[in-house]
Image 1 (cartoon, rainbow, N blue to C red):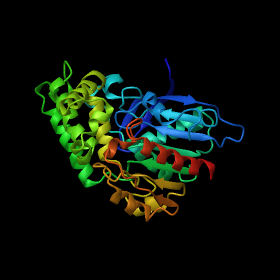
Image 2 (cartoon, rainbow, N blue to C red; image 1 turned 60 degrees about the vertical axis):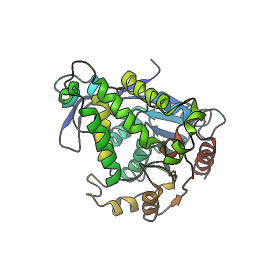
Image 3 (cartoon, rainbow, N blue to C red; image 1 turned 180 degrees about the vertical axis):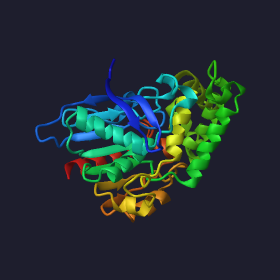
Image 4 (cartoon, rainbow, N blue to C red; image 1 turned 45 degrees about the vertical axis):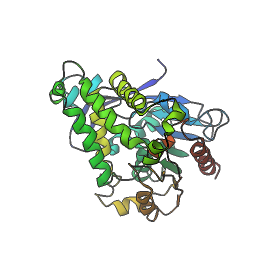
Length: 336
């Protein structure tokens, strides 16, 4: 195994439910230094894992295992940490409880403090849902986090983003073999439909108009769509996808006992040095949302990046210019 496991026991959730025998799967890189000020936390994105996070750091890069203690944590529902697919009855499959980002970060905090001896985080950063967790960290534990850099993310899922997610969820659940989540065999048609709808939003209109998919090895549009289908069918459990989708839909840093739903108060509660880095062509997390958020965060720098790759500009290897800008911003936060 290339990872570690942190047993949480039974966890009381924000919903009032209890997640039985919960656990987090994580991996660390580098070492905690003597002053304990070199911690970088990388949560995982929607279809991410600690392995896929390895594209965001490396020796000689802004996040460097020779300098930093990197903690890569798998979100609940991704099939590694507690998920519908690996939980026992009565919380298996569609009976898995609703998990909020508040719950995820509360458990990640326990991992860092109880298991790893961390007293302060230098930086939390991440793409998409991982970036949403960076906001959550800074709002939920404002005195524990020195800096955050969410890229292609938001502090609260917008109504338009919510509706997009309803579309992919409905495409999956329309498969007759879905059976309300109690499927005997995977709902393959639903997973393929989910992937095809998702692909239309992951990149921008300009990306498709200019056939930029050819730059990442696809000869035709259909090649791209079939590859996305295969990825979802081969690598993703339907209940896991919908578990994380529900977490994404309810993402809101103001939910919970600290701010009681007041998003303005939650944003103002962030003390961390903050760089917000949206992509101008992102169809999930448009820069306008981040611009509004930046006005309420006391120490925020709003840095939209213009890329036709849309949300997937941040995927390692897609847009080298985005990667370079991200590296520069991370360096600024870690060196300040």
